[in-house]
Amino acid sequence: MKVALAIWNNRISPVFDSAHQIAIFTIQDGTAHPSGEALLEETLPQKKIARLLNLEIETLICGAISRPLACLIELSGIHLISFIAGPADEVLTAYLSDSLEKKKYQMPGCWNAENCPRHQRQCHCPHCRKKRKQKNEDMYSC
Amino acid sequence: MARLTKHTTEIILESISDGVFTVDYDWRISSFNRAAEEITGVSRKEAMGKKCCEVFRSNMCETDCALHHTMQSGNPIINKPACIINSKGLQIPISVSTALLKNMDGTIIGGVETFRDLSLVEKLRKELEGRFTMEDMISNSVSMRKIFKILPQIAASDSTVLIQGETGTGKELLANAIHSMSARREKAFVAVNCAALPDTLLESELFGYKAGAFTGAHKDKPGRFALAQGGTIFLDEIGDISASLQIRLLRVLQEKIFEPLGSTFPIKADLRILAATNKNIADLVQSGAFRQDLFYRIHVMKIELPPLRDRKADIPLLIAHFIQHFNKLQGKNITGIDHKALAILMTHNYPGNIRELQNIIEHGFILCQEGMIDPIHLPEYLTKPTFLIAQQNDMASRIQSAEALAILEALQHNQYNHLAAARELGIHKSTLFRKIKKLGLTQFR
Image (cartoon, rainbow over all chains, first blue to last red; front, side, top):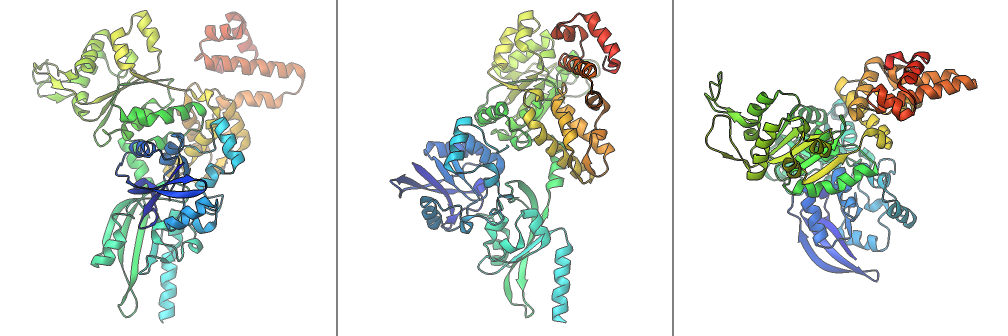
């Protein structure tokens, strides 16, 4: 499985809409193997998504993201983990240990479930993900 | 004295409507005022000590940071346009000004950034220019999500798209969203309502004319096709154009050229055509009112917009959107809609679709001064049937109410065509008229 982290200065890029670079990792047996970096020069959202799909990205970890772009990414089948902040290597380790939900990695203003687009939009627990996959719908509105 | 000055500064910073924050040399937030909390959706407690780019989340943070420029050059930046993403994932247009932050001795200790929320200005500008994006299409329904899913691919292609849907379903909004997502988005989006103009006028409006082409044509006039060069032209109500105009339009689509009236030289048409209709074009082709070849030309990609009655789950979302919209436009503070009023709106069939719902909320805004929109603030034609149900308790009255509701629904379904409504209800037309009279529904005739 390929995971991409939107990066800038070795940290998670603050805004994915204007991010220029992603670091790609292949996850095998719970270990991340670097698979290179790619530039995201595309400005059109659909081209950005096409680029991610071409790179066979299955999960995208990024910082803040606008709702329309988040909606398009999720509709394209890429699992989106947004509003994440911190050094890229720490975030990757946290992702592998399933601890990205920790406040430390949440962008400011995002920890409170009431305010958080991620938490409002979808729950990432296996039960909810399975249910969402089955019904092909979630609580997110475009 | 110094303490008093600091206190005064704090009061001033807290009372202004512009967001203000300061950063130290490590780009960490050292102060964050109330307006900054409101605009970004990040509390001061959370913002303090965090990297400014992770709190501010602007599109210029990575490559074109205004504060970075000021800290390096020492020159302030005034009113630079930018866009941030708030804690709810909404894009907020802002203007940014920056300056160096100095202490009492004049030593530089960091930078200060002030920013102004331009959401309202941007919203008004968008409405004036008629520019909309996919974000402006509010929906959570499965049918609309299917459309959203294919929209990027449709926008990326340069094919002609036919948008079908009842009146008020947002055909122009969708066309606008396609244009905004396409490679032609920097160029013009020209919308023409083909049903609004007489045939001859529509022809000169679309194709333009040369001086001397006809009496009164004193100078050249570019048509809508010329105005849309490089961009997108949206032909609304295309099912209403005449046979002669259909032929001319076919030429534009087939050969990608058009000729202004009176011109002998064709002009290359570098534009994308989006068409819309509330009629069933296939039926028009069958009846001979629409050319088959033109139908196939515009039918490359068809998007069917579902009517609001088929996606009632969107009604609460749309109501919330319109309340927010009118609150901003009218400077009111309507907090929401009462559950009884919402129940009434959920049972209505919306022959006018989203436009009708928008008008209902606008009606509510005129009558409701503050608080929640109640049933009394809704138009009478909506509250009457519910009122009828609420007041009756015995069996006979309940049957009558159910009859009244069924008749009203059938009438709304059939655009108040009584014959069609009677047919839908399985009763004779005269029985329907008798019942309408008996049940006191004459205002719906």
